[in-house]
Length: 94
Image (tube, one colour):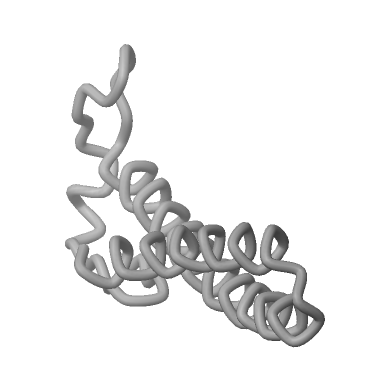
């Protein structure tokens, strides 16, 4: 049995797929746990991609605001951009 996510491949013999672990407040099979982990990896990748896209958009907004002399908008866009960069870095550092 093999469950593949965006970055990690989780493999284990078919005969242990139904073994259970306590996960949260209930027992979960290893197969279900592997699927949950795959989903988590995919969601983290979506957050990373979203933060990268948002960083680019905020950088454009900041440049436009600076060109127009709108210091408040430029400052806000810069702060949000820094936060989006921090999200990306946090994900990439693991």
